Length: 414
Picture 1: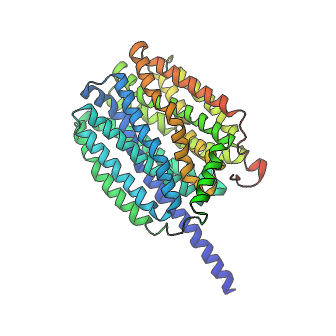
Picture 2: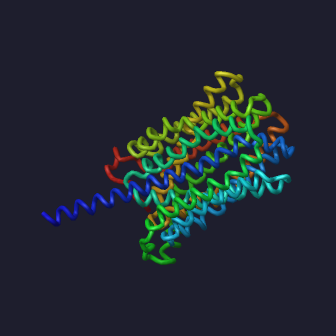
């Protein structure tokens, strides 16, 4: 009887520790997305203040993506090989976000804005492979569900931030609002580190460097990983284009106020509160492809409709529809890639995907900016839609996790 009680108590501690880990990481992810949603809201104001062209705006977006994609792999490798560093990495990520916006708030020259964008990408690279790799290893039997819960915390701030910051821009100068963001970064980074500093004391996998490199080599040659990486890259291209030019279209062409822009950005991200708890678990249940292919096609069509929908209720309806998929699908594509990856390289798999795809992802916002300068913002939305439909086509022949209904077991890793 004593042994049974001890076993039950041990199980309860494990469950409590897992839930604490999920809760704290989800809260930290919310802060990361608070910072990320400042960018599209402030972008039109920065564009006007610094006198930027659409191509230069594309460069800012590409700079942020470049540092994110390039550093994902080394950060992911560090998180996989040295799990005891994870609380430090995630805490530094939050501080880096604060520093990035402090720099942007003081920017008088374009080069400083580029550096700020690079720092925002760096902070994202520090956070995402570390946090997502941790959750993937902690909840292998409910990977997409855990990542969706992690994403829901972000979506709450995705919803609130554009509205709140859009309203603040109407009352306060943008530079001061950005400069004080360093305070939140410092406080949040320190708090997260204190809460998680004793959570990552386990030794790294015993396979050693050869085993780790072998797992990476096996992953990079896996046909499903190659196809999934290409599809994910195409999705990212469309996403970056919309993130860069939808705010400019709304505020500079349609002449909406910063607050109304905030409303639209809220619709773009906030609808994930409804879709993430549905689509994530659904992909665990019926399979990744069954959810991703129709979702990619629907999102591509909605991007194209941005070029057609007249301002007002119809445009708001299109943006609302986009919001159902815009962030939610990134959690499912990430879970799909991690289904394929060995447990030794869960965090690294994200970085490997970014390294492979950035060659064609990074030019996308710049090309879209040039098209927007010549033909108007609608041309960039058409390009984004084409990328999403192509991403769906790439997925069709791939062999992906078919869901618990088909296998009655967690996804197997290669």
